[in-house]
Length: 281
Image 1 (cartoon, helix red, strand yellow):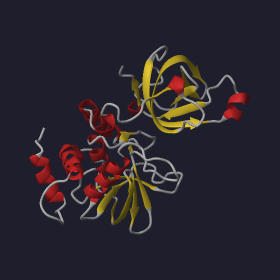
Image 2: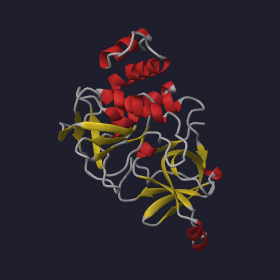
Image 3: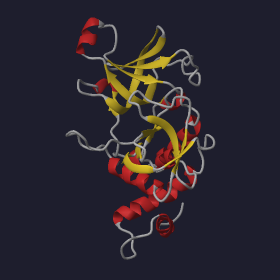
Image 4: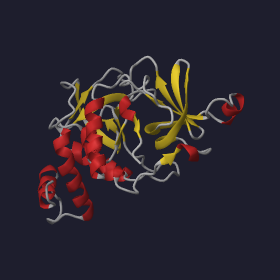
């Protein structure tokens, strides 16, 4: 791994200081992140650019505003949320936003589409590259400033992005540093819990209808789609296994739980093997 002087030199090439020479604590943080992320960012290329666009603003680590007014949601990553509407910012949210700003400055962006081009909020879904052709998603994941999420049908780079996250996790970077990001136990889920979570639990029962449901040791189930192999997830023997899953925890509400007491009130949908794994203990 490069020493600190090498990241500082890299930082200087990407962003010329406007004040006297020297690297602040925040600058040193980004120097280190960039030195780790740039080699990885050269990977995870799906194909040639579908559009060349101009950036207006980085709204957070995974959402961009273009000069033409469109909002772009990065495919394959979920960055920590900034504080809004009275809610506190999640760990490393500001760092993820500022990292993306630095990574994308001084040039137009390249957008590469996967299969679905819009999400339910009307945002453009795209893989984003800076003017040097480097992947923002891969860089964020390599620096530990985002989580990899694989949502069908936009799975073209899922394996490559999962590898970038695995590198950061092994090194304990960013959100993977001990004590940085909370891990929620399925048995501890309570009313008010929801949104993106890193969740662990034990599979107590496996049910099937048009989905496969992994019923955990708490009021949570993990939903697997049966219309795709998901890396053999559907056929796997999950009984009594300890699992870890990344995704959005959906609360179906107290009325649902009262009407269908046999079902779990909360669930997380899984589209890919890269979203779920046997838990690290």
